Amino acid sequence: MEGSNLGFALEDFVDFEETLTLNYDQAFFDLIQGVYNSEKEAYEKYCKYAHSTGFSVRKDHHHFWLNSRKIKSKDFVCSKAGFKKVTESGTKIKYRRSCTKTGCLAMVRFYVSQDGIWGVNKAIETYNHELARPDDQYLLRSSRSISDDNAAILKSMSEAGIRIVDAFIYLSDEVGGVGNLDFIKRDAYNYIQKERKAKIETEDTNSLIKLFKEWVIDDNMFAWDVETDKDGYLLNFFWVDGLGRIDYDYFGDVIIFDTSYCLNKYNLACAPIVGVNNHW
Image (cartoon, rainbow, N blue to C red; front, side):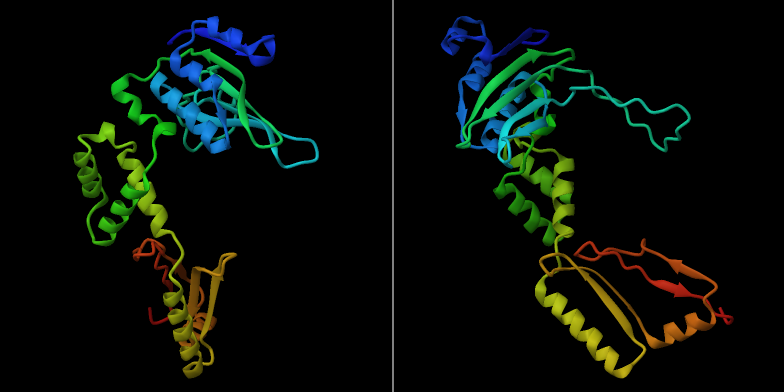
């Protein structure tokens, strides 16, 4: 319904069943008539409708019930809703991103009962931008997701040393093309990157700390520290031996902090701190 200008609020109708007489797109009609049991279910339903129409969705404002953290209403809007904030003149900007917002009014507002039942309270079908063609709809961000099965395949192939791009091509060939895959190459890279940033396994953490403690016995100036998250998993670690500390006390004029050396399988950077003494 590109270019349509249709909006309504359920409270505007005495009898909601009267909306049957309006000329709605069937997908839109199914959306506004539906009852949903969670935010995820309601969001996925709107995303499915948006995908078939040709636009992407993002989550917007929400309100809570009085004296409660339970959501009372939630808005889902077109990704092009609103306008980019105007930067004050004279402000230096290192990188200026192109603006994709057009002030699109397409949205849906769900009302949530105290029992957690989601129903459409307001919906607007108004677009002021070009909608994605059927061949390009797989590129819409809110429509993309990596299934558990595909995620498992990506992870196992990556761990086996297969390039992410090759794993992606394999998966797309299996389903007859990229358009049938529900995610793009960038999503595959982002997923693997996220996995690599996951916490170090417990046994490796214990082995590392055990090694540090052994070094302290042989070198009483050896120092080390670790950073863990709320679950006790290791995020970062640092160490320096006694000779390095002595050299730094005498020749601490020049110091290099290099994080570009390499990344290991946990995506942790090797960051050697190199001090230069009078003998270079």
